[in-house]
Length: 356
Image 1 (spheres, rainbow, N blue to C red):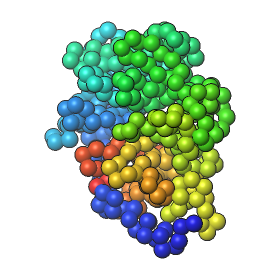
Image 2: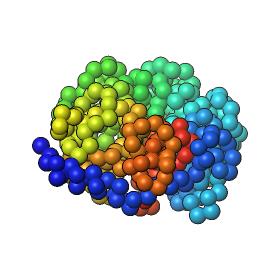
Image 3: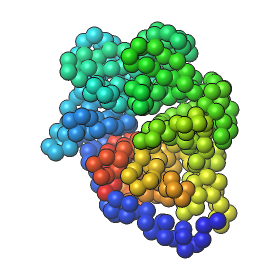
Image 4: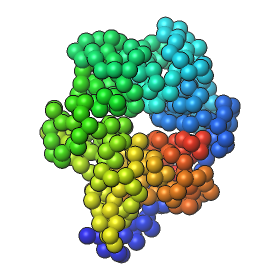
């Protein structure tokens, strides 16, 4: 059990992980499409050019922010919510609820589109967009065949695995699918389609997942996975191919700061998460979590297991800045550690914030 002194020390350190300041990088708090406005930002990535690329769910676009000039550029999407444009310029194509994105080893961009049920690729040399997985209709089919002939059901998160393949959180199918970029073949990598608890220590094969929402890959190949409906976070061991429960009781809530992330109890409280939807790894042996329905960003020390809030109050709102623990958030969906700072997609506040 963590002592009161230990909890106080942990909480005191929370705002100073990157300093004690949070500021808005882009966004006015009002949804829109302009040089200063964003509309429901979600997944983020730093591109090969050093710019910040991000999804805008309600603008149905992917935009790029030059971190030096603060200039915004459209990379994909014409603003219309539809499934059109393959084979042509990405900027003239229609997207539908883009959720997350990544760059492959060639510098090309991949996008998950929740409401089109597809994964699309933008060739960054030609600007041409194409579909690499999904048919545009929700369902579950196609394992062992071409990704373009397989059905997905609301894909959310994608990561580039160490072998160059892409792992996809196929959330409504309660599976993680693997797309082999060299052959185009797709398969189920984890999950059975059943909505049942994931036992600690269970093997990847044959074990159910409930709402696999987002992932982040560690340098050693371990995969951290957040289960949205499960309100839990697991580590998938790269060597043993087994699940290890590291955070959340399974019950939805916001509690447990200063104690162990897993079943923490102090003063009658229990560590709970509420619909976690974003993960990123920091350089200080930490995992940062967008605890979306708690309106908070939380940090799990992977060495000690202690969980703390680093941004947010637990109440829905918009600011004020710059004190991280007084700044209310509104359903943040993504976090990204890069360039020595933590980027936060404060989705329904229509801002991307930076914690320094």
